[in-house]
Image 1 (spheres, rainbow, N blue to C red):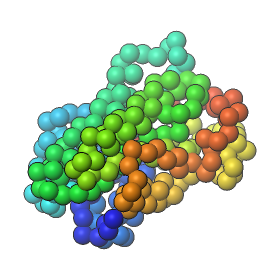
Image 2 (tube, one colour):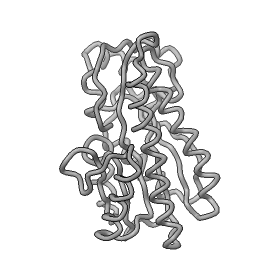
Image 3 (spheres, one colour):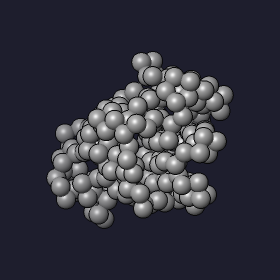
Image 4 (cartoon, one colour):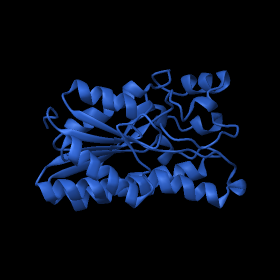
Length: 249
């Protein structure tokens, strides 16, 4: 699919993977519109609010035209032992990571269908959607939900010529994960990742853009992780200390 001349919405576009994706899409001739709860984005939006999403969509269409691409990158994390998980934290993570992607898909897909546009979407999940690392039950469960949401959305949106896939980044040097990047953690990731290094937002963005371009791929989950998800013993190296949930990947 030719990307040039299209408009894209990138949630969480103010930092990390979202910001890198906006930059790479722009290189492909796409008008990339960053949606983020933080100031400085093209459109400031709370992805957990239907009203905020609707307002953001009206502004996007008015200023840049109807989007035919979506990258759902807004996300938060929560780290706690299973027995210590607070319900409020669980609800917040699911509101941003799952509800936020659902509302974004709905808003962009409705606009595309009304305008008669084809297009593509990528939901940013995580390798933790398929792994079972300690203290990450909340985050992992939300990211597993993202995978299956993308699969069902692909079935329902396919007749409208809208493709949707999910991307699973591995350990990536972003604002979300930086608090967990002790020297010991980085060494463990390098040891247990076939390509032997952390990912970068730019590497993940490259996977996202390639997925948007692929006309015959939909409903799939692709790990963009340097092979980290291949290592079955990796979970034994992943003990995190407490870090606060914060926006961005």
